[in-house]
Length: 380
Ligand code: GLN
Image 1 (cartoon, rainbow, N blue to C red):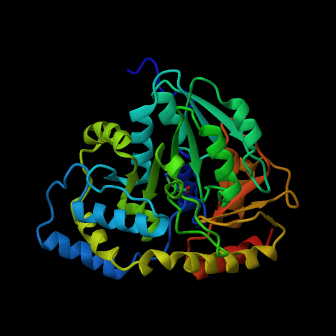
Image 2 (tube, rainbow, N blue to C red):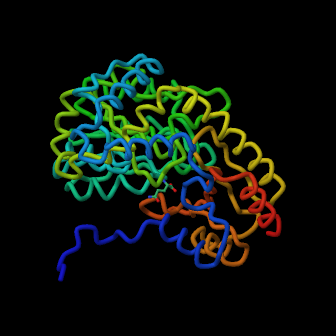
């Protein structure tokens, strides 16, 4: 029997809980973030071919060289940053493993990590497992802007890392140039690392620019950048992603990676290396998802929900103050059970469960799914 839990406060993630409820009551599942349409047939054919062509044994520990080279070329072209595929890029089992590995490789007991909330739920448990301290800073709707003056006050001699996520899950906000400027001033001459969760890098709307840490040399040299092919190629179930970091950081990252997973699945790496040759596969994503965002927002605008801004990601959040004063967790459950639409209560992304009466919808769905959901929400 386990006498002392290492994560006593941690339950099952809200994504699993809400998806299970959606399945149980046969609701439209706009809770967990995943597409309900197929990933590209060409990509499936490439994986099948790779398997038939014998790519079925361990990949090299850091990932297939051809794939790392493609990623290096893509990053240089988009952001002007040069990453050495041999020493500065590692292929991971999704963004989640990259996040865990980066934290595990760098956070020592009593190190402090600044996390902006609402925050993706994978960050805090990893920090705590390493004996680190989560210094959370709660952001508020509707804009969820980072109050950089408050960040400055949170910095101490123990601050080891700042975690950023842009485009942001769950709020759909993005970092802009003025955020980058403020961040640069704060970390300058300090021994602070950045973990930049950029899994939604290509899901950015209205012509906005993705402010990757890779674009700013003074930030890039202290950053682990996390990416996910699940988001790029509508294949979240493949659990493939990567991490970029300068060689000294990547060396530490790989010390953990080699014992956590050693390497990740080979045929999909072969396929993605080939598929990435066509840059349209990812450059077309902004317009693909922007169209979904726009039609979903138009539909929601006819309901009693109040729309919050959305500049990127899979997600549209709304206020439901006009409809109910229930807790967001209760409201989400009722919405699922009684109205047939599952969502995520945003309080789940705050360590203190702060409830601004905001829920999150995932719009990475077929048009007919979104239309059916709006139809049901109109009944509220
Ligand atoms: N990132 C996805 C979301 O926010 C879910 C990932 C997961 O289920 N762990 O919904």
